[in-house]
Length: 395
Ligand code: FEO
Image (cartoon, rainbow, N blue to C red):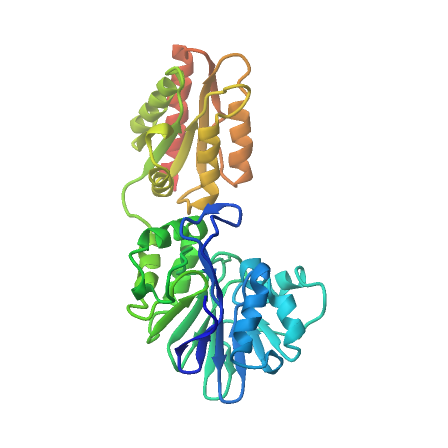
C-alpha cells in the first residue's frame, strides 16, 4: 500500500499490501496475495489506530503512521482480533507509541498476553461499549468466532464505517484500495469464507444480525479491498452463505472403493437407511468436488464413511475428506463407518478415533469385511444404515 491514504475525512488507510504471498497461514493458497489493512481514525481530541499488520511489515506501518502524526501521540490501538497477521506489529508499535492504550475484547487481551510478554496499557471492551475520540465514537460489536473467540467489529458510528477485521474480507491484493476499482474477485471472497468462516455459520448469523439497522457507508475489512459502494453486499453474502438449508432428513455416505467391495457395502448401507425412511446419498469422493462434499456434509443429518484400508492406513483422499469436517457447520453429530480390507484393516479404527475426536457419535460399531463382502457383511451394513437412519428420525 502506498503510504497513508485518506479514505474519508480524517480517516486513513495505513496498512500494507502483500501481493506476492502465495500461501496464507501455511494453509490457504492466495493466488492474488493479500493485504493487512490498518486504519487510523482522528477525532477532535483522540486518535486511534484500528488493527496493525504482520510483524515482518511493521516498519512500513510505522512509516505510514509517521506521514500523518508522531506515533508518540497515538492514544489507542484497537485490536479487533489477535491473530498475528493483525497483531504481530503490536509489540514493536507500542515501543513507538508509549501512551497508546490497547483496546480489545477480554479474549483478545488474554491471547495478546501470551504473545507479548511485557506489560502494556489495555482496556477491555464489551459488546456495545463506546469510546469517544472527540466528536467521533468508536462502538465495539462483539462477534466471537469470526473466526477466533476474540473477534469483534469496530463501528465508527457517525460515519457508518465498519472495521470488521477478518470478516467480509478477501485475500486479494488489488491495484487500488477499493473493491469498485478491481475486476471481479468474488471467487476469492467465497473461498476466504469457506476457509475461515464456514465452520462458524451460526456465529456468522448472530454477528450479521447485530449489523441490521446500521446505516452503513463503508465496510473496511482487514484483508483485501474496502467496500464504499454497496457496503452491505458482503454482509448479505455472509448471511446467505450461512443460512441453514431446508429439506427432509438425509444421510450422506462418503466412500472410496479401489476394487468395488466398499462400494457394495455402501450400497447396502444406503438400502438399510432407505428401508428405515431416510434417503442416503452415495458420494464416491473421487467423483465429487470439495465444494460438493462440504455442501453434502452440511446438508446431511448423519455422515457415514466407507473406508478401505490401504497400506495399513486410511487412503489420502479420505483423510482429506475427514479433514474437511472441521471446516464445515454440521447439522448433526451422528456418524458411522464401514469398509473392506485385505489383511489388516486398520482404517475403520483410525476413522473412529478421528470422528470421536471431533465429537461425533457412532451409535453402531463399524462394520469391516475382508476382501469381497459376504452376504452376512452386507446384511450388517444394511443394519448399520437402518440403525443410523432410526437415530436420525429420533431427532
Ligand atoms: Fe487475518 Fe484471523 O487473521
